Image 1 (cartoon, rainbow over the protein chains, first blue to last red):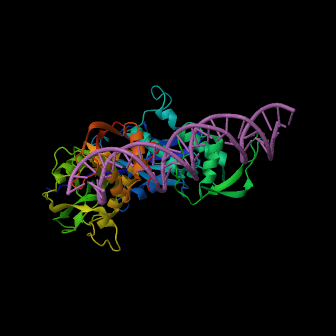
Image 2: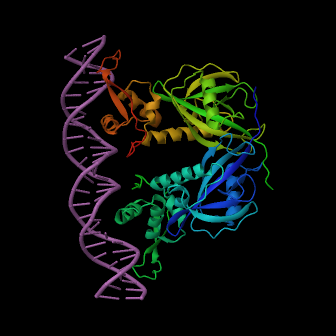
Image 3: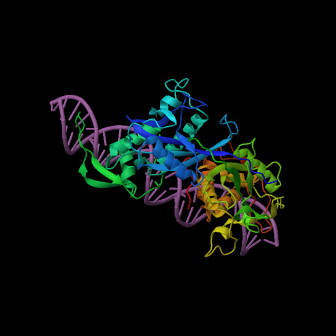
Length: 235
Length: 235
DNA sequence: TGAATAGTGTCTGTCAGACAGTATTTT
DNA sequence: AAAATACTGTCTGACAGACACTATTCA
């Protein structure tokens, strides 16, 4: 009666960052079949002595080449369609990670290549115009992951994980602009961020000026708060 | 390099309903080791030809004895600590289900007994006063599941899944009272529900009176809306 | 009539949306 | 000075919190 057929358990990662004002995700080019030559989310199998989150952290370090990953990681959901991997039964616990601009990744052992892709190039456009089709069900995972990030920017302070400390409010606003596709109103954004206790804490120094001129923005660090209540509203 | 150690993959279910004005969850008493005699969330192993959600629906039917389950089911999260099951490596994809008052369950084949428990009796109290300790990591799953339901009542119309159609607004309000622990203000609740397009649709009939007297409430059915925006706020 | 339950109306404060205006910096 | 960027102030409408009041039903 109580059977338990064997499965492989994997983790997949949607690692997001902001590059040139756009939301970008890390993809690897697969070296092995199936989907050799296709682009996929980084990931790998869970080892016998670790849980899914530990496996995700390990893969994150391996795939980004960053030993002390500076961002945020959380479980997204589990994908378990019986035919999602043609080789065998693989259940994947997908995760979402956020980080400030990371170095250009190197290809790991399993990957022929690794690079950042602008998410809109992968998901938008008439026929996914500018981006490759993704391996497995990774397009769906990416869609779900982006929606999770969009939603969490509304009611958490997670946006600060996308910027390196110290940061300016215009930088933080550009995070919202990139993730939501449209920038929040300048004045209202400042009112909300500064009015939410513990969202950011001011320093007494100002940032560098750009080459084009303009006032130098005040620098901030992340505060203790994790929730925004009532939420910041999307568009 | 690319190893994939074998795991068992299970689903566990936190099935909630409202009983006597309190949030209740379905538990089964385990017949087999480990944790024989303990109470646990219903669940079972995923079969080779089904995904986790299908397995959850199947277990739901088997454990509640209800063929056409009238409620809502969604994935919660995956629990994968290496030692969460002493027998072997089991990864569990936990789900949350909601339903209007269901019949008293019968014990299934794997369960010595099955019954509804008031959630507060399991999770609150100085030392979980009135309820048994739960098997495996099911206490944590139950905590997470309750928080998911509490949160989703804020920004979705999910509360209507807890009542059988047709229903009255006072009934619906008692759902919020049970889940949140405190009833929303009467007038504000009505204003919000009736002001949210598609939350409920009125019928032209009124409900039965109670034995104690009182005005007979108008009956409603579920509407098409799934989101409440801006959200209903928790006390 | 009184108790119990259902339903309506209204005042007030908070906060988001919109947008106009001021300040600082580089070329 | 002009352009570019950072920052402040204010008007308005939507809406939640709080709570008083009215309506219907049964004993």
